[in-house]
Amino acid sequence: MAKKQDTKNAENDNDKNPKANNTPTVNKHYEIIDSEIVYEFGGPLGVTAMMVGFPLLMYYLWGCLQFYRGKLVSPFDNQFCNQVFKGAFPTWYATKMYVLFCLFELFLAYFMPGPIVKGAPVSSLKGRRLDYLCNGVTSWYATLATSFILHNYGWFRLTEIIDNFGPLMSVAVISGFVITLVIYATTIMQGNQYRMSGHLMYDLFMGAALNPRLGHVDLKMFAEIRIPWVLLFYISVSAAIKEYELFGYVSASMSFMVLAHFLYVNACAKGEECIPTTWDMTYEKFGFMLIFWNFAGVPFTYCFATIYLHNISIDNKQPLQHSQSWTYFCYALLLLGYYIWDTANSQKNRFRMINNGSYIPRYTFPQLPWGTLKNPTYIKTKSGNLLLTSGWWGIARKIHYTADLMMAFSWAFITGFSTVITYFYPVFFIVVLMHRVTRDMQRCAKKYGKDWEEYCRRVPYIFIPGIY
Ligand code: NDP
Image (tube, rainbow, N blue to C red; front, side, top):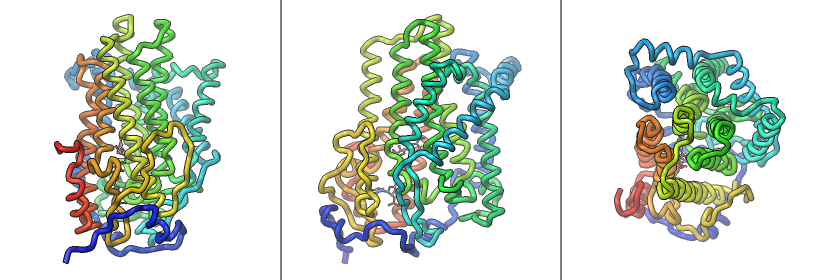
């Protein structure tokens, strides 16, 4: 007979759930799934190609934006290669900027106040739940205040970021490789490696350590939250200040980029306490994929729209202007995407946190309506985990991905249609999210079996209700 499904009020069920504690609870089934070696990204060959190809692609696309107004030119052209080599040659000045920024963020992550949140039970730690100091918000405000003071008193002009973009990108790329090697070697020396395939390149790419820490700072969470989005935001702020200095005003397009990147970094900081229980924290290891992408890939490719707007304004001696209706459309798409993304993530994370006893109400800005569901419906899986079936999660299984993509496309639309390079981020992001969906669905299907089938039956659409 089909297994009985439970759809009921989460609040009633709360009483029956043990509140958060650090008592190890091992679920053998999860442990087996989490420790299984699955070759992804084309296995050792595929990941080696990615480790070489990603940095080269970054240089190529940046070179086209920087020197050819976003036109795709031959990557083998001598002049092009010389321009990129000279323009992106790493300097000591850029190294100081980048390293000091990372150390400052690490200092904040270590010392700023914030609530301590328990992560999900980690199978490799026999079900132990790790503590995470969630001081993202205080660190973010401290970063904003510090940068304002540095800029205002002329101790560090924020325009230096956009003026040194090429060298900074190279420093970030080198850092991505160096940090990968250091973390990998340290993990092996400490004997903390987990889920190793035995193929060096594959293990470097996927990582050896699951939860590497420096004192109480979780390095994986630090790298995901404190570096990429903050850098991305400051690249746009830098370009906006530069525009103001050159033209006496900040255009609607450049303001859009500042707002877009502000929303993203602010969301990561304000919702940080939801991150310790996510898949990235409990399952993904800290290897090249996460390290390189966070220290170099995200900040230095997701900003292509800003770089394009900046370069075009200098070439044309005036910022890019769109029709009012197009500008309004881009802003509307961004804000709608943000609203769905923010509330969908918060609905699921808060629901899970309420039910495992780790929920802490926070009043960080902005708290949007429908961010917490009242009387949510859910499926109680055989293993005890709950799958939310109401709110955005009753509409489509990955609607937060769709919303993230709406934002990504709005970042590109604000640059118009004269170059394809500003569309790199949304197109690449589609590939990333499709891959993530496939991995996640397979993992959940294995993990939850018939309960997952029931969930997919109840919420049949993945991205867009009624369509797909
Ligand atoms: P999800 O937030 O979708 O998390 C997936 C996990 O959530 C599943 O493995 C399962 O975990 C749990 N889950 C799935 N369905 C339900 C449900 N109905 N109720 C409760 N729990 C459920 O994915 P991500 O971690 O990939 O993404 C988080 C956010 O980060 C997204 O908004 C995404 O857009 C964004 N993101 C952004 C990136 C960028 O570069 N800009 C890159 C990647 C993500 P369990 O095993 O615990 O049941």
